[in-house]
Image (cartoon, rainbow, N blue to C red):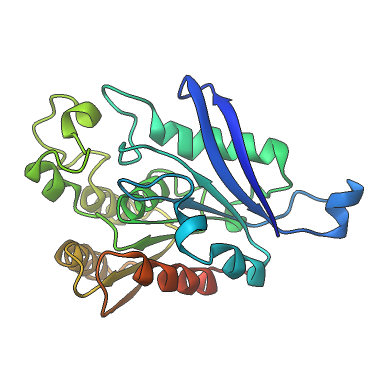
Length: 254
């Protein structure tokens, strides 16, 4: 596997930013005679982390190697993967600019069936949000201890650098908006939208466990396909290291 750190000037963000990329190596890459067919996992960090988190705290490179999987790890600040009211357009950056930019450099497939998205905590919310708003772009999405009930966090208010006003402006509620995963999943169920395969996991000692149970119960009530796992664990990297390995094993990769 090749490990590459990119620093580039994002047109969407209006500033330079870093992205970590893991690329499977093959003879074709060195000869220039390759097809753009690599399957890709976009891996999103949590609140307080950045693009370097998974390389520092997990064995993501080793897990991806087993599946010949490219992994793209961008930064999104404290944005909750949203086009911020007073900040940068991180939803557009992650869901549109990054895939286009990376595919122009590396031999990554643009086919829906070859693209996946996952993340932990804030990134778990982001992965489901992006997958539900762009279901035509991803075959599968996974949330690890995700902050899935954004309304709960919105009511609690600012903490750990998470300022709801900078992200959402003067909105009084996020219910029934595109920021609300419960709203999105219900709307898609009503409209018969073909969704990506969904994978959800959370530790039973995690402070976000109850939020995850509420989301699981709704998806199951709507009779939508969901792979759900839980087990002993808190909101920490030991749990997420094992969880991302299980996610990669679960992905629909031949």
